Length: 229
Image (cartoon, rainbow, N blue to C red; front, side):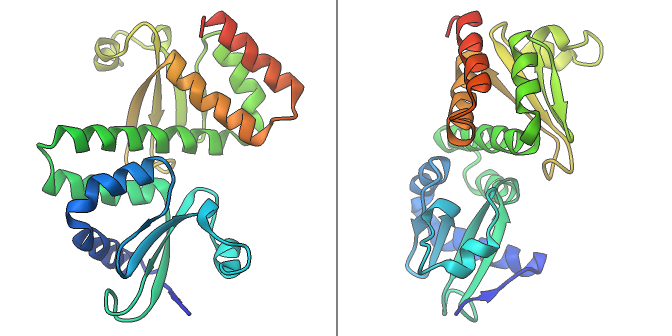
């Protein structure tokens, strides 16, 4: 039986212990996290909802949300056997701090961190879109911005020369900009996605959640054709 930890400071202690034990396995862990696969150490483990078993993990399946991970810790890695749930963006914040403090000059780990950030941001965006997915697809097809709950997708022509000077210098002609502000993410974040890269995420989301919706499937095909993907 694992004790459920909900206190913010206690959750931070557990995740810090996980990174302490992780040591030289950090790259392996980041690859697993990026691919949403569980990762085990001797006495600690990170699980995604898809890793949990209907029989063995019935309680955890009732508790965990779709956009959370489960971190479990057993004695003596923690004072008692414990478990804690972290939203993806919450766990990413701890990961980012750990990488910056310990591997700030490691370009490979920095690259993986950026990929994880982009994955988390776009997953959060789709999570917040919910029933507005059809409107989002129609807007994307017309290359128009679409925002929801402190997050938004912008095309280059949506950016303002004065207010978005930095972003206009960074963005490529065949990219979209995804921006996120608190409370959609713990900190204000932004990420750039090439059209084909964004389409890949979009296609996966539609197939996983709306595979029988012929209208959304049709819009997806139109996007592929219009953007020559």
